[in-house]
Image 1 (cartoon, rainbow, N blue to C red):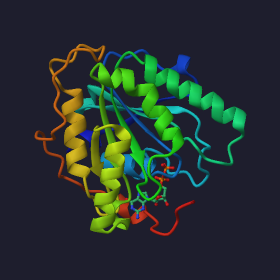
Image 2: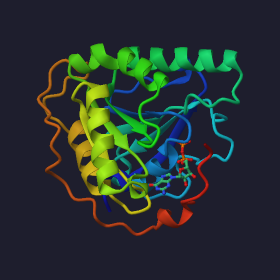
Image 3: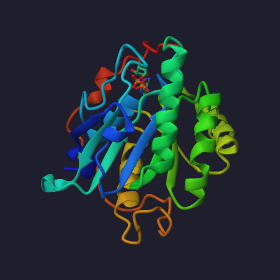
Length: 239
Ligand code: GDP
């Protein structure tokens, strides 16, 4: 079984103080509501409902942690942060969550990497850019960072290349990957990359001393057995 497929629900934290202190590396998944975050997490972990692909976007306002590791020994954690930017959420709640998220990203001690999900047909939005500004200092100190351009199956090759170029400019040269849960595009590479991020022997826990490269070249995560793609509704985008 692939390492990411060991994902199991650990806890839900409606506020930062509810997050357990952990000494294993953590990877946060962030993204605008409807970016495809839940579907991507479910595809990567080979679960149908690990991250709840809610039909009421913006509703799940908690940080959900999932433990990873074979033989029930947790060696890393995935953090699913609430999607942001959904119009129907009251402004106050939005602001509160932006603060919680920013605080989490700035201060979570065991945070090892961030995966930002973005629907390339929308591009990076203003809120994505605010988030990029928030995490930039930590990325400069060595935090790993990847932008996944989701729903790549909806793009022609020309559109995909254009989306990559635009996102490259917007993220200032960070790691980018086209991803499609429907077509399983990028799944193996992302799984390998996350494994690499969290199993870097040089990592000290404060994100300041590590030598991880962003090239996926280790591990094997090909043993897919659940087909979450069947859950993806090609026409059900909410915006
Ligand atoms: P979230 O709000 O970021 O968690 O987004 P969801 O995972 O709920 O996905 C939003 C919409 O995009 C849903 O209708 C999904 O079925 C659709 N979606 C997600 N990933 C893909 C994909 O790889 N390809 C296609 N065609 N649709 C996708």
